[in-house]
Image 1 (cartoon, rainbow, N blue to C red):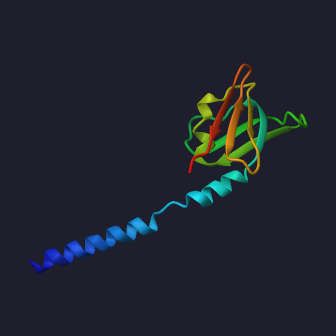
Image 2: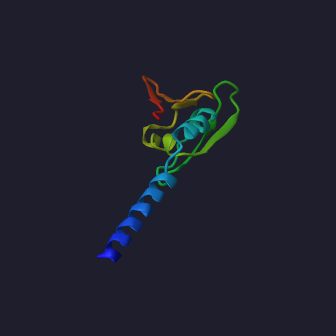
Image 3: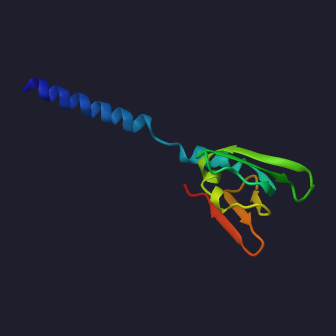
Length: 113
């Protein structure tokens, strides 16, 4: 009887340990994402083959200079399938809004904590 109780107590402690050590810092992630910036007219859309990497090429519509956006987060990457050549993506520094400007519409994605 006693070994079963010891095993249950150990399992409870292990469970509590994993619950406290695996917490996600949502506010820290939001602050980090808010600092990112990209304004880009898409010439090479991001590849949909990887789940985390977001890499798109094009030019900045304000300066007309070539540039690319490389980011490693799931937030931007989750909208890869909505982006086509000719679209403009806008993520302003300090904001938690990722926008895709199309010829006839605007798709706005707000980051949720």
